[in-house]
Length: 462
Image 1 (cartoon, one colour):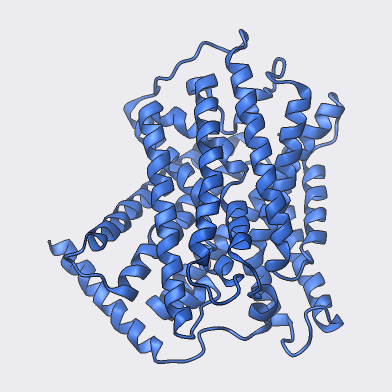
Image 2 (cartoon, helix red, strand yellow):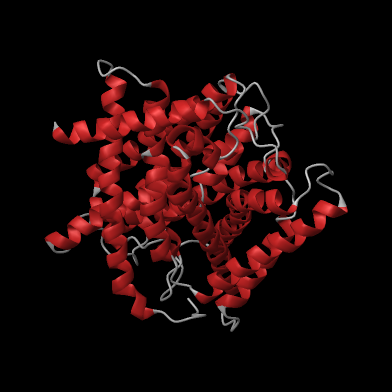
């Protein structure tokens, strides 16, 4: 009980801070970043496309790998719970945003909402670094994975090709620089819709490929037991949970909802429903078929099992080609979505809200600073081909608090549900459980980095 008293004291303090902040006016920013990048012209369909792009990406191909740490029953249970909690959290966060919008105080950015609910100190020292860290590292992972996908396509055409990975990473980054000049989040809506179809395409290819591979006599006998020492099994469980948290994570709900034209009530919930329909028809088939085909030999990415370094590919070349092209195409859209928070900041610092977003005064700074930012990210992606372990760490440290803790906390502070209501205890249970999961997930990720870091070198070729 003492623990809940301490939590209650901090909770009451946050409520008082929020009441003081709510007396101020003008939560909806009017700077160039908000006006140009986060222009509110979209429908709930567009919000659904953006959210699907942010969640249902190639990271879903890691789900069979997560299953190999858990086995059939716990794997399906964990996947379902992570999906249920994340969709519930996003709906709660959307309701909080609608609450302020209905009062004429619309919050367009995560940091705007955080300022209102928990105060500027927490926003500056926690929310902003975590959100921008997640977006920065995710963008590195997107460019690295995009370069790797380009190399797979190249090797399919030129089996003995000698071009190194960093060249493809640089080319992918260059294409990103061109597309990054699209001025607003809303202007990405058609790319996000295209991204949705890409996700359906490569998920179908992965499922078909796994079924074909599962009947191939060259595949090792299936073994679904969880191997390793007790310590390895425990770390494996939290690694799997961190993977699933990262797969379902988005960290951009306020920015995505900001693209919706007013009135916003109910629109984001429809977008979430659209997104999770796609999640349902892609996540489960890929996870189940991939784990069924390879068991505890499932690799970090199911494509590595379907196209192994040694021995023949386990699926037709044309099917592998479609899968790779769809992944690379969707990664461009994903990268642009996760570029939006920094684009908004750059625009707010360098743009002139009094002139049009297509004016020379605003186009030139946009071209220079977005390109410079992507050049730095591309350089890091080329230098660090082992960044997957660090992405796992950021997933545990970043996605877990932003997507599985703060939405429930914000709801508790804003709506203050009674202790007699189940939602009060449900929210606090989720907050506590996922805080512990995030901390242990960070430890497991640090352990993985420590064990693997000596295997890699700068500008490595993988």
